Length: 244
Length: 182
Image 1: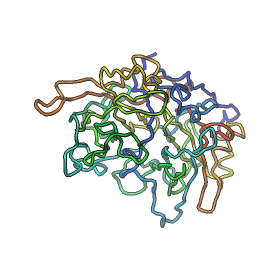
Image 2 (image 1 turned 180 degrees about the vertical axis):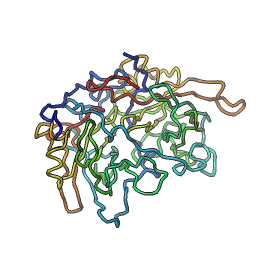
Image 3 (image 1 turned 90 degrees about the vertical axis):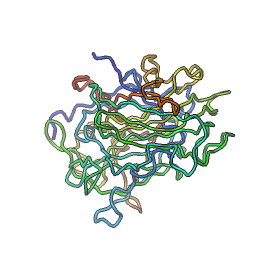
Image 4 (image 1 turned 120 degrees about the vertical axis):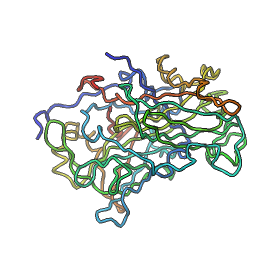
């Protein structure tokens, strides 16, 4: 029996955690109201369970999985773009062979999903899903079309800014991240509670890609850069923060 | 303290199935014919007691020896699974019971799965643990379970049902599942 077994774990009120992350309870985003825990989170030391995590490899990826414009016989409508960047650890080092999964609306702002009832056309040549692995320097790269803005029922006249959903694993279970990549200068930012659920301005800006001419292919497609930094969420009162 | 520079989390939204529920990920960690294969299912519930049909549950677990097989590229057991909840909030995994896992500083943790929950309305993942009802002694000595109040502990132990094990996840309200900061 561990010697400290009689000692209860500390708990942490959600809002006291990282300023990078949104809270669970964010009433402006109506969907959170019945979907956030009322009890504080229990803080346990990271064990082998938390410090390991799944790693996918080449066999997870099909040849055209990274190119959302070439998954059907025809070419999807919309503005073709390149989305690329690096996946980094909290120490700034690149994470190689990381599975990056994305999904998005088509250029008209419609998802190829049965639940999406937005009155905008589906595109028979666009499913909106992609995946790839990072290279030895942490780089990923997708070819896709710029997703359209679309209305949602959160409040009167609510529209989501253009965005691409990203899913990443990192080196450990604690690194797991699902986020959204936005486009620079989107006038809808001001009205979007999901974007503003990240209360720190600098942290919000880390979700916004930048136009990068070095990634742009002349006469073919604009390139957007979006770097992603994972990890560190297990910095708890029981451990030295950022000791890596 | 170092400035926090992490990329923030955002909700998966209602359309996660487009990007996250196809291979290579799977909810079938072992073939159902495997000796010891066990079906774990449950319903994801919101604060009104309603099922959440647009969520996703992930599990991460050790193999039967308590070792974490971290690469999907090698033969043998790989301890990661994903299930959508489109079927009336229900998620299902076919897997095997993991072995006991080391506790930092000595001792063992009872067999458990780490469980991650994503959904529209969740701005970041929720994390919990699932323990096994037939591990009474190991659960009693588990360094996590044994330090939780009884009510919180009970939410983490699956119960037997006709198909295998049942593990409902209550995001909010009466019977709220115990969630962890990671």
